[in-house]
Image 1 (cartoon, rainbow, N blue to C red):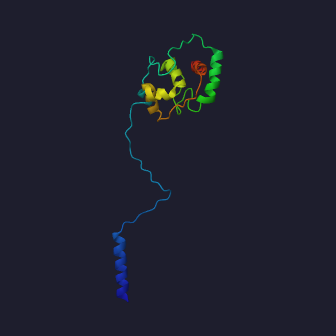
Image 2: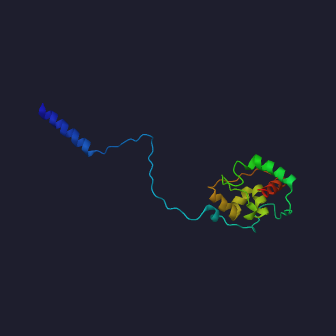
Image 3: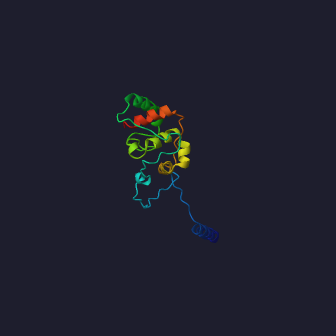
Length: 160
């Protein structure tokens, strides 16, 4: 009887020593904190400033008066608040770029064409494509605004 017991114990030890044990971790995931290489280029440097690019779309020329048209800007602010604030803030990046100072980076024609024609702009305009890449391929949806609405939003953006 002792011999049978000893053989069973030896076999059990041999089997358990030869197999890999898997440890189950609670939570279902494991975090590995490996050091990653950090790029020194900031995202704002990735998209060039281009005031000569007018974009692709119906707007070929926009003339801003020296003074801001406050009535038109108020109409634009209402449109902006209703449809643009889901993705854009004035001074902070969100899903889309911050829009304060946009005319220091883009021409008024480019801005209006992007508002009116984002589908084509994202396909054909190199700046729009660079912005798409910078903002994790978050596409700007066409809000089907009229040229008058887009002009009002463009005027409002001058106030930011």
